[in-house]
Image 1 (cartoon, rainbow, N blue to C red):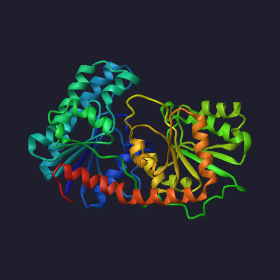
Image 2 (cartoon, rainbow, N blue to C red; image 1 turned 180 degrees about the horizontal axis):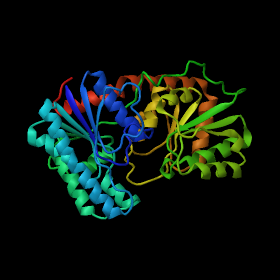
Image 3 (cartoon, rainbow, N blue to C red; image 1 turned 180 degrees about the vertical axis):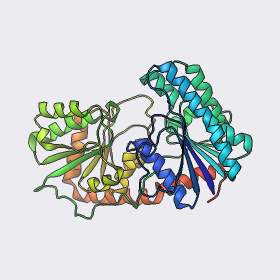
Image 4 (cartoon, rainbow, N blue to C red; image 1 turned 45 degrees about the vertical axis):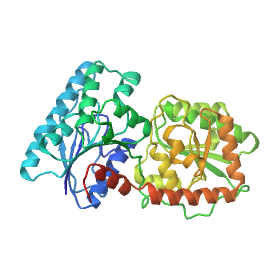
Length: 388
């Protein structure tokens, strides 16, 4: 199978460390494992290819101008337009069997190219980017961005969205809503495994609460630090491990100092994804403390990694998180933005070693059975009529 993987998003360094990069690498790695010849068309690759991706053939797309938003939008359109020429040249050498594109704000060329040539295509949608760009960044030509989304969503053989909320958005734009499907994120269950150490007892040893992810406002880590302050009021054997970096890192440390728990807080800064499993092994209870928000459309990679690591999870009852934790059967769901509820759930799990063990085993079983990246890719290709 000959595959073109297209990422025209200048914000995603395909070989980088952020969640979008991890997702892209996982899909590419599955194509490689299937024996496919993979051609990557991307604006940004970031670092050198990580292990397992050395045979991916990289075709850089034109850089996108930084700076003034209108100029950047024009530049991004031009970069996407260049996809056609690259695909033409490669297709002339040997026909493609599949075009797989990670949806970008100005990306419409790859799916149109595939439709015109009868090549099956999959459009992977991770966010309602028009809405996201308009609300959180700068979007000059919203009508143009919506037209791009409508054409890309309508041209793809199959549209795979990581959450139901994103699928609902995509169906409002796609010419054939029946081509739009929800396929949640996955996890590498060979890389992320349960810790070999025995569970930490309820008393007599430090107990580590953990979070993995970018330290940004919409991850709700402030609520987690506040919960640590509550827990430490009566018991200073709690520890908090924050794996990742981001714009809220300094503010979170200041918050911990003000609460008198900075000595109980450890931050790792940015780490390579291959280093995450060992850090997960240090955690006793993992958290996803998302704040209350309308239109919660994420499919958090961290939650699937927590499950694969066999960790009991405490998470906000929000969007796809509820589904990932099977309505609370694979973890404890609490109301968003409530430090007291979060602290209570953590303390309850600490005191109940049997429940922690049962939740961890069920979590690992579910991840291995239903949330592997191989399953995600095979299902996505099947929706486009491509067998493996």
